Amino acid sequence: TGGRTQEISRLIGRSLRAAVDLKALGERQIQIDCDVLQADGGTRTAAITGGFVALALGLRFLQKAGQLATLPLKNYVSAISVGLTPDGVLLDLDYEEDFACGADVNFVMTDSHQWVEVQGTSEGQNFTTEQLLSMMKMAEDGCMELFKEQQKYVGEFFALKA
Image (cartoon, rainbow, N blue to C red; front, side):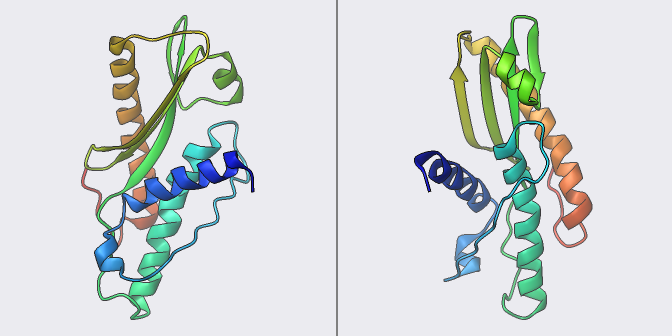
């Protein structure tokens, strides 16, 4: 595996660990294979958002099988990309939008409105603090929508805080 693959793996791992009470999980290792089969961009963010659902379902399975005394989840986690163009801010970038953006930022957030990761890059268009705050607000709203989608799959056994 190359350095890029390793860094993506670390990003996904850091993001998903934010969802878990590691003490309650105990001495266990969980491996989640995040193959994004269909995407028009944002495979990292899709892997994190979908990876949370897989993680929650897997932990619920272990709990129901008697392997875990309690469900060791503490937060929902989702991720989304935001890009800056000369015309404004775009949410959930597809490949062409990502390519056209002068700056883009990936945001990872919990349903407690806490940021897990913020990774931004200027690719020809520097941005101000005001623009970054605008991108953060848009990302927060986008993550809230993603939590509602995740809730459709795991809400029966793990309540959404937001």
